[in-house]
Length: 339
Image (tube, rainbow, N blue to C red; front, side):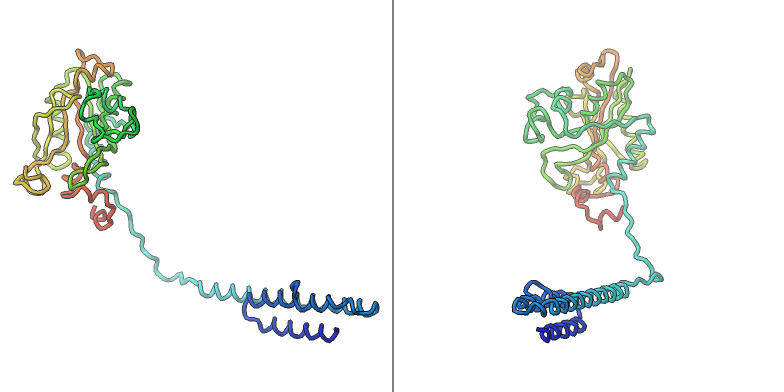
């Protein structure tokens, strides 16, 4: 048995010294020191020894186990050290090499035009107001003189969350909230996202952006409205910008109008973008309906006002000569990098 133990010592130490990776070391640990290992198998035979031989063989077995464990620990430590050195050598950095240049982000064209529009209206004395995109039916429709039977409230045009809550179809709801809480004079714009159940094409999207404006004070007239909007168009597009006003109908303004801008793609001769008309609808506007003022707690016999709402997306298209609304939403870096 003593000879067998010495053979195990020699074989184990030789195998450990020749091991080339940690897996082999782990396998050798199990082979010689595990519960079913070679050393354990020898120790199970000690019952056949005499009382005088057992302590001698037991001490020898313990010495061999300790020696094998120490050699395994030494070998593992050496492998870890050499492995670390190899990794450090492989990961060595040349600090003299030039760094990689980072692509700088740019403002989205919608944000560029929104900031320009804000600056223009702020320069004319307007404040900026905001409100919720998930809006009560009352603020989106009823307070704006649109009863339950009004076609604009149909489910084919509006995204309803329930009977009383919708995704706002216009930021005019912000105007109502402001008129309820603020005594005239009022002069605000309310930019934000709005939603309509619309088919996607070159000039339409179910999600788009609006800038609504509201002025309420004593003696406000339609000429004030035209002057503000013409000034805005020339400040944004240049002094040669051409606009026109057409009579229209909105339930929350009376009289009402739409303002068009000459098509930037064809210069007024007619094309796919303007559907052959030579003009592109830019915004709706009009004098605030007396009923809307009264609903918001403002005396229409004393105060009058005007309101307008423009699609920021179409304003942006006109500003940069973009001929397809979908380009603003596709996140194509080749397109966005031009601005």
